[in-house]
Amino acid sequence: ISKRQIEIVQNNLRKIKFKGFKLNLSRIGFFPNSNFINIVWAGVTPKRKITELKHRIDDGLMDLFQRDKRFDPHITLGRVKDIKDKIKFKESLDLEIEGTFKVNNFKLIKSKLGKNGAEYETLEEFA
Image 1 (cartoon, rainbow, N blue to C red):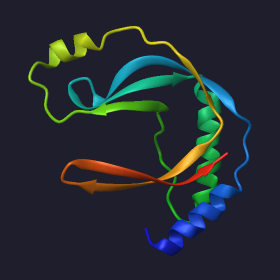
Image 2: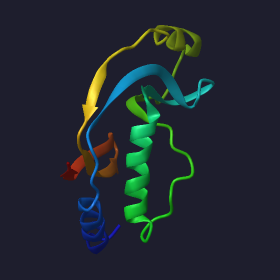
Image 3: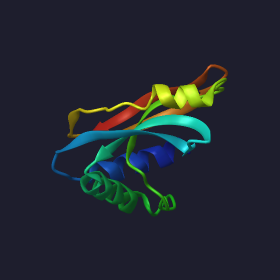
Image 4: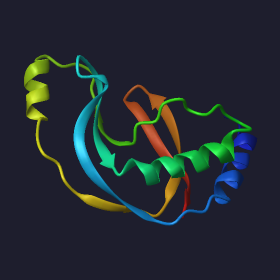
């Protein structure tokens, strides 16, 4: 998007207020699915608070962008280019995960695709 649109996005995101909340790690999953793995992720619960924050962000940006139709709260653990033994790979990730963390901010991040993958730059953090 243009620099002017970035400024509008930042101004709109600065208006979003929310109370911090805790999330728990839940399970490991794959996008788009376990038969065709591009991304390995950890799910988070409860989904209600993070979904509410996502809706506030969408509401603040709906003049600029369409609302995402599907939202599955998660933390991306890694991207997968090629798997030689898919069964062994999935078995190695069939483990219990646990942990709790506090969400007290969100960030506007610029991603730039390069020959070595995506590079990320935080443009602004919103508390």
